[in-house]
Image: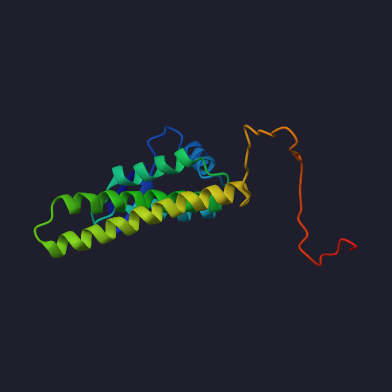
Length: 168
């Protein structure tokens, strides 16, 4: 994306020779066919690196590359990917601040913020994984040993507690 502020209004263009194709490709990167969703996310991404009236095109394009890397399958995954990119950028900013503190109060504040942001990122990764797997966990047993005289059951097993409905 190419970003430019004109009279306080953000203008977004693409470096691609065909702007319509660029929009279609970007929408595919976001896992959406909805132009309204795309317009909303585009505006959010374009302003994520904004400092006052200064636009940080590199930060915005980095954020889009993070989203592309996640390869969202739908709008919810795209929103989470945008948040993950934003949290990552904020985490790196706080890491820089922590490396350049002047006093203990600044160090404590930067350390707390950095810790919260890093934990948030991990939580977002877990949320994406849960969403993609439908919350299902898969356990694969690679080796089972049954000693002589032992028994093994293969398949789904349910346990009925005492006084259960097993007819006894």
